Amino acid sequence: MFVVADEGISVSNARPEILNVANHIIDSNEDDAVAKYIQSIENIDKKLFNSYSSI
Image (cartoon, rainbow, N blue to C red; front, side, top):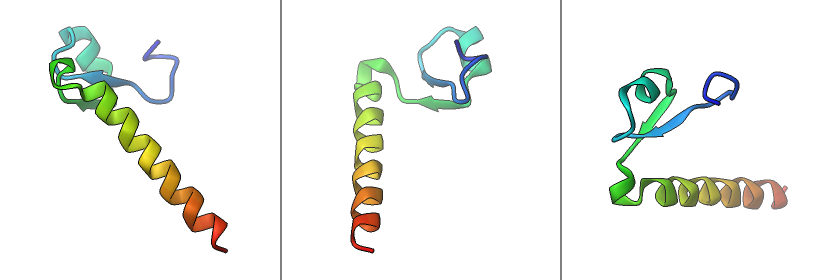
């Protein structure tokens, strides 16, 4: 899946073969890294939407 996708995001405690092909490595899944990453994307989307809606 990482090879086909434009972006490969992996948690830091993934297997080495996954870490080697990841474009981005986030914190461990034990630190809620996936949830935090999704929330950060949502916040970016909201900021972009708000900036475009004020034009």
